[in-house]
Image 1: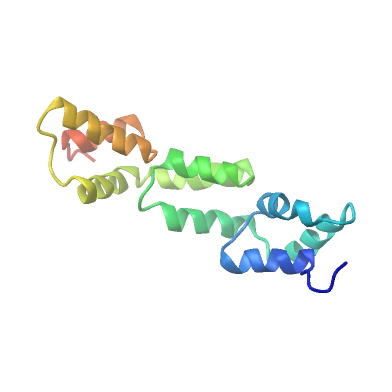
Image 2 (image 1 turned 45 degrees about the vertical axis):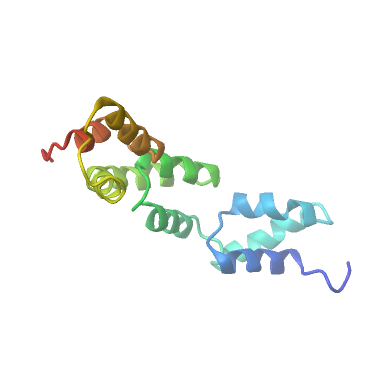
Length: 149
């Protein structure tokens, strides 16, 4: 091993210093640097045992960073892409669903701020909210201007 190359653990810590990463993400990013089979798993096991890798913190981080701009289905997609435990993902998404209407209204208000004037504008506003991962019922209520919570 060359002395100027950081160890697998060093590389993992550098990635973790930027943001929370799941174990699956770290494995994917560091696999190319593994020189001995099993050495990556050992390094990640050690970091996980010391609390440097935490799926719960990854979930909380994604939810806190993205909830103000995205709907529950889009956040669920991001969490699943990180290779997190399906149960943890389901619990996080269930918590987001209760605030979905208010978050969708805030995103819509910031982007548009006024009800659609015609069907083309209505469709554009609905597509925008759908692209952000908000559900169909929520989108309809927001774009229609219904305040029935």
